[in-house]
Image: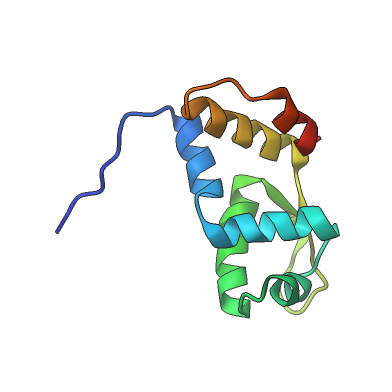
Length: 116
């Protein structure tokens, strides 16, 4: 079985890659940033990604903190609830900066301005 190549990198860079290194996750974040707070169904409709794939990719985004829920995840009790997803813009900006730094440069001011 082949091994994954894992060049040495800072843990913070690994976290940024884990969160942002997936097309579906980037599409979900972009959807919420473009349209504002969104339900899972709205994300499905706007991205064209099916329910199970959206759900599967929302979970690590929420766990990483880049997406948060309203009501907060700690208050969710199971069953059918109206859950809205939002982006933590400050954490997203931090992750983007770490990714940019990992590519060998300082985060450009234009990128910071776009994210804020």
